[in-house]
Length: 126
Image (cartoon, rainbow, N blue to C red):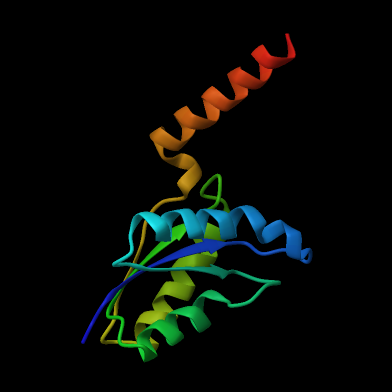
């Protein structure tokens, strides 16, 4: 069967309200790509964790997973933790292609949008 999935990978927090912008991002991405299974997974403190989500996708027949770290920078979680998690998931699901891209906050387009937001904030306060 096969299928493609996009997993937005966030840190997680104790407060449920912390996830709201990530859930909105997931919904906005899913609305633009109806042929793509778009979900949200977390490193810690919230469910599903990334390995659980990829296992669920593999069980549904998904064979191509792209992980997008929705972090501002390539800190220790993205540089150290994510590669280990990816290796474990690839061993657990050898029939699934699992790749990760860089942290969303390091993309030039995202940085430009953040720059515009910051400048607009300063102008609005003037």
